[in-house]
Structure formats: C-alpha cells, structure tokens
Length: 286
Image (cartoon, rainbow, N blue to C red; front, side, top):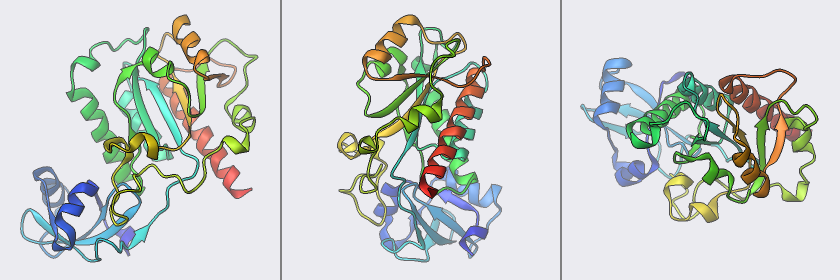
C-alpha cells in the first residue's frame, strides 16, 4: 500500500523534533503536497527520512501532517549497503544536473562535485545557490525513484584538493587514451576482500536515534562513521590535468579506462555508475 503513495523526503532532524506529535511542514513541502500533488486534509502520503526509514502520513490542516506509525517503528526499514558507491564529478558545462539525477536513480550512495583545472564551469564555487540547486535535484530524484537512502552529499571542492587526500576504500580515476589500463570491473575484482567494508558500518551516524538517523555528511561524527567506498572520479571535458593525475596516483587512486571510445563527461559518469552498481549487484547474488 505504501508503494502506491506519493513520497516526501523530510530531514530526520525535523522528524525527531516533531516526534510522534506530528510534522510541521515547510512552505515548500506544503506547496508540493497541496498544489502539485493536490492532496487535501485526510489524504495520505509516504514520508521518507533519507536514512532507510519510511512511514505513512496523513495530511492535516495546512502546514501539518501526522505519522501513522510511531517514529521508532517505521513501516519500512532498509539497511544501508555494505559496499557504497561514490561519484566524484567535475561538473560539466551542460547536463550536470541530469548526471546527478541519473546517478541517484541508478543507486549511487555518495556524490561530490569538483572544480577541476580544465573545468569549463568556473563560477560555481562563488555562488552558493548553485550547489544548493544540485542538492535539490538529488533530493527530487531520490523521491521520484522511491529509494529510501539519500546519497551522501560532499561539498564542492577543487579536484586537486580532493584527489590529494589518501583514498579510503577503492578510488578509481577514469582517464582516456590509455587503453592498457584496467576497466572498472577488473579493478574492482582485484580489490582484496579484506579491504572491503562490512555491513556493520553505515553512512548514518550510529549515535543518533535508530528511528530517524542523521545523514553522515551533516554530523560531527561523519568521518568516523563513514565507510570505505568505491569512488569513481570523472574529469571535465578537457580531461584531468597532469598535476591532478599525479596527485591522485600519489594518494592511492587507480587509473582506469571506460572503453575504447572517448566519452563525454556526462556519458562517462552515468555509464561508470551503472557498471559499478551492476557489478555490486552481481557480487551480492554470487
């Protein structure tokens, strides 16, 4: 029954603040429920916290809704994946938002926009509204594709700074014109099993309420709570600079190729995420 209801993603902090007493809806949420979905008082919808929990709710007077299950007993609870997949992307001039949307729909667990030396987009870091728009796109995609886990969002940073940090897990740096490099699946297969994370680790802080946990990227304990991730880094239209590749290799990133043809950044990102998600699914079924 819950799968037939339209979904609204609400921050777990706000769910905890309301407790079992109900939810105070924001202006944007009320507009979405009343104007876009055309719900009326008494109509039902689903609430997702982005950390694996789903409840059904009933719309009350304007600006309020009541959960139909106790906060600590969601109707559905999905455990996090034990093998998260991340995408670090030098945002392309075009199709950047589409890439974020499609990666979310495919099942990526972590997203990080980058400003590379050869990026065509140069003003994003100076305009905080742009990264916020990207985050909104990811939230909308998560609601639309009915996933219970919101991808962990990393702040916009320079590619050089990001790639110079020692890799935790498996870092795959996609490059072109180097056909002797391993492909994605080959690099993943060569990753030793003892290096892989265990199901006990989650991308939400274990210190928060089990009823509505807090996304790791927003907690002080994020660094210690984070798990090792398979991260694919996709460069800009002009490719990674020599300096960026050198920094990445020194930090433990592995150079990989995505095939015999030269792909646009947006194509490479979506194709790479799809292949990694398919590889993970095959690993889980074997």
